[in-house]
Length: 217
Image (cartoon, rainbow, N blue to C red):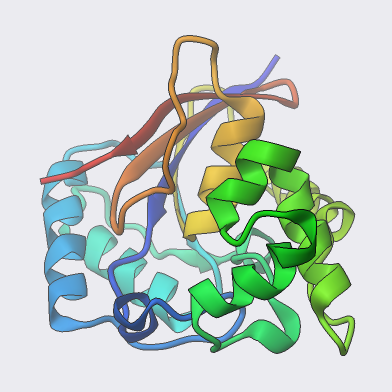
């Protein structure tokens, strides 16, 4: 039996975050205030005895992970795990979020991301966006979850029983995991804040999110 914890931290606030633009596989730099909230997260996590440290391969996640691990008591190099990247928004990358979800949801009677989640369920947010993408690049729910499953399989190969793993990831990725795997007593009503903490426990391949969107610092 193997049980370990993944400390999912959302990256610090970026330029596209401030502009409310779609930022999936595309990237933008951390803002000064994004660096500051990452430093607050680093201070809050400095005494956590991490055994492994990861981020996705986006610059915003790499930079946030570097800030956190530079402050941690364990002298660990962090590695990249692209399987836990943000949702791929296809041709909607870089567009304003409100416009994107209006296009994706309007024919389904709801013009917002959370409106789609509430009315049709999480997986429909992926599928409606795929349907609306004229180039058919955006990920559907099957593609998204298959990618994350491959990421968990990678972690299973290296994690030992009792390990604590830092993993700097992204808003929709963390929110999706929390909605799918949260324990009954945990409320998941909003997307995670920048540099917030979500803890997922994985035991013999079974996931349970026990902490969600905890503001650090």
